[in-house]
Structures are given as structure tokens and as C-alpha cells.
Amino acid sequence: MDDFASLMAGFQVALSWHNVGFMAVGVVLGIIVGVLPGLGGPNGVAILLPLTFGMDPTSAIILLSSIYWGALFGGAITSILFNIPGEAWSVATTFDGYPMAVQGKAAEALTAAFTASFIGALSGVILITFVAPLVASFALRFGPAEFFAVFLLTFCSFIGMGRENRAKILASLCIGFLLAAVGLDSISGDLRMTFGSTELMRGFDFLVVVIGLFGVSEILLTVEEGLVFKGKQAKIDLRVVLRTWAGLPRYWATLVRSALVGMWMGVTPGGAIAASFMGYGLAKRFSKRGANFGRGEIEGVLAPETAAHAAGTSALLPMLALGIPGSATAAVLLGGLLVWGLQPGPLLFVEQKEFVWGLIASMYLGNLAGLIIVLATVPLFAAIMRVPFSYVAPVILIVCAIGAYTISNSIFDIWLMLGFGIVGYVFKKLDYPLAPLVLALVLGDRAEDSFRQALLGSGGSLNVFAANGLVGTLVVLALLLLLWGPVMDLIGAARGRGRRQEKPAEVG
Image 1 (cartoon, helix red, strand yellow):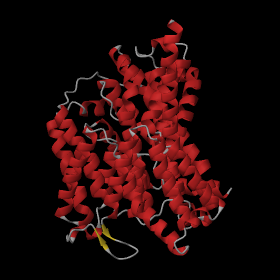
Image 2 (cartoon, rainbow, N blue to C red; image 1 turned 30 degrees about the vertical axis):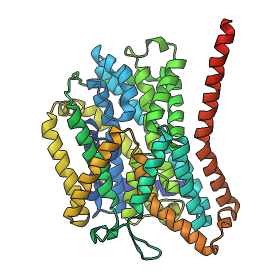
Image 3 (cartoon, rainbow, N blue to C red; image 1 turned 135 degrees about the vertical axis):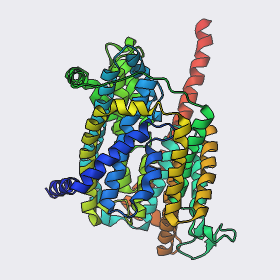
Image 4 (cartoon, rainbow, N blue to C red; image 1 turned 180 degrees about the horizontal axis):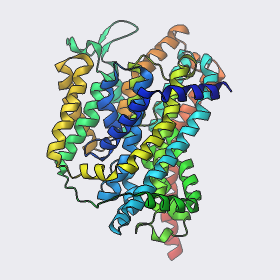
């Protein structure tokens, strides 16, 4: 009952006139971010995060989360109308979305994509609503050892359960740890890796790094690729929307299955990309019209969009409840919470109850506002895609530079932003993941502080990490997740060798 009352109070906060305004502005900005080349959810949130510094934390997170919802919706527009995925998880949407547009069914495809996005995101918010408060019951049991175990669980899960090359994930994490260690040691007061530079005494600012890694690097990549946009026209009217909605109940199994897949992949480090492809693959396998997938099947649009948005929203659950970001955007939002003086994790539901429930309430309202706005403005945002990139890129770069400068009013931060833009460009060209680097940069110093505080309290004994059932369970689970991926790889390789050895015997 207390949680229900808190949620109702959260709705009252989210429905205040200025927060509703921030919600609408955020959704519109997010859709623009989603359809513009060189941007995307994590990039847009990172670039615009400095604009929220003077705002109330609840209003700020409502604005940023609405940008995220809008970007999720906007990515489908480019995938369906232009066959250009607005986000990496929108690739699977192009398989059937663009063929539908070619057949003159662009309005139906867009309506299906937006509605599936809403359903997927709503399922993720419902999961957060009911599961996150349960974590608060453990809040008072967390000390330095327990917090370090949670951070260890995060890092191990990224390595063991990640979809990218594990050596590259580990290398990215290590670089993030090195960046997090630069500056003044918060425990000993020593300067580390500053090389005599006074600018580096405060370390690498999280926002400067992510603006460069995401925003500037994407501009460099897009300029290199020299994209030329050719797309289909689309106009959505009420009859098309109602007709499409009337046909959706027949696909209820696909929607439910994709939502469950997305929620699982969001809470674990699988992510929205894996969720979208998994949702599409399962839909193709179990659908009666599976053979028609890839030729303009509406079910092939519903499945990946539902799964991807359920994963993208559910990724906020471990960020809020444990301080573990489940995606790149969640990592950026985690940094924003720290900037505003909020500590994500189990204690957040105890110490900042009004903020948490205001955020959860805004998730419901933001997704609904996003669905309405995006259905009404598709022709406008489709036209944005025809603006030459030579005009768009300088504007994005100027916004990035302003965002980096306003953090500390330092020209040095702009040079750092450009430097990390080059680093991000190299990472993407070499196919190194950026999310582990951002994760280590955000959590690295906190994990180190928790580790050292735990050892100081135990007199240097490592037994503190097995001193009670909670910390012991977290450490064991972390080690299991670390080993899970390599063990599965070995089992798969052994099975592959066994099949190759059986084939000659069968021929003989």
C-alpha cells in the first residue's frame, strides 16, 4: 500500500505543468535525436545532460528519460522509411519494415512499430514498478563489502554474458578503470597519473568523455560513410491507426513473448540489440507466416520493436535498484544521477523515495506522450532526414562543444571532448564496445573506494567478502557469471568438433 501511495504521489509530481512541459519537449528532442544521423539515445542524452544542471533532479531526469523514449520511437522512422537503422537495435526492424514501405504500407508499418515500442516499454516500466521496491528491503544490509560485491557482479556479468568479443570487453573495461583512476585519490589524497597537469587533478569528467565518445565519434563515422538518404513518404491518419490497432490482438503471443525476452535481456547485460534479433528470430520460428518474413510481414516489425524497447526500459531497473547500468544510456543516466548528488542503488528507494516514484510515474506518462506525439509528427520528422548532413553535422558539433564547455567553463574540456571523439571513432572502427568503458569510468572509483574501505574495516583480510550470506552470494554469483560465457563457448566448440568427427563415420 505504501508503494501504491508513493506511485500516486509520483504521478502528481510528474503531472505538474512544468514537468509535463519537460516531458513533451524531451519527447520531441528525442525523436529528432532518433532520426538525425550521427546521434541516437545515448548520444542525445549525453550531449543534452549539461543543460539539466540547474534543474530540480526530478524534472531533469524526466526530461532526459523523455529524450530517451523519443529516441527509441524515432529510430523506427529511419528504419522503415529509409532502410537506415536509427539505432543498432533497429536493424531487425528494417527486415520487414522497409519492404512494407516499398509496398505502400509505410503508415501501417510505422503504426505497428510505434505501438509495439509502447507495449515493450510499458512492460519494462511495469517490471520496474513491482520489482525495484523489493530491492529496498535489503538496503540497510549493504556496507562497503556488499557494494563492492555488486560492482564486481556488474563487471563480471559484462565480461561473461556480453555478446561482443570478451577480450575486447575486458580491454575496454581496463581503459575505463585507468581513466577513472586519474586525479585526486579520495582516500589517501595522493595525485595519480596527472603528469603535473593541474587540469587533470579533478580527473576526467564523465560528461566530457561520453560527449566525445558518443557524439563526436558518430559524426566522424557518418562523415566518413558519406550517407545519402533516399526514403519513402509516409502520412499517418486516424483510419490507418485504428485499422492497424484492430489487427494487433491476433499477434498477442508474439507481443507477450517478445516483451518477456526484452525484459530478461534488459535486466541481464544482453541488451536491446540481442533482444531485437532474438525477438525477431523467435517470431519467425513460431509464426504461421514465418516463411513470409523479410518480405513485408507486420509481425516482423512488432517482434523486434517490442523486444528492443522492453530491454531498453528494463535496463533502468538494475541502474536504479543496484546502481548497475544495463545499457549505454543507463550508464549516462547513472552519471547524471551522481552529478545531481543522488546515489543509485538500494538506498535510493529509502532516501529519495519521492524522486524514484516521480521517475517511475514519468515513465508511464512519457511513453504515452511519446506514442501520441510520434504518430502526429511522422511527416515532419521524415522530412528532417532529407536535410543534407553537411548542414546537420556542424550544428551537432557545436552543441557537443557547448555541452562540454558548460561543465567547468574550461576550454581544456573541449579539447578533451575532441580527443575522446577520436578514441570513440577508433573503438568503433576496431569494433571495441564503448559501454564497458563508460561503465568502468562511472563505477571504477566507487568500486575501488568500496574495496579499500572494506579491507580497512577488516584489517586487510579478504574474508570480509565472505563474511555473511549476502556478500558471499553476490561474489559467488559474480564468479559464475564471469565463467558462464567461456564455459558455454568451450561446450559449443566441443560439440562442433564432435559433429565434424561424426560426419566422416556416417559417410563410411
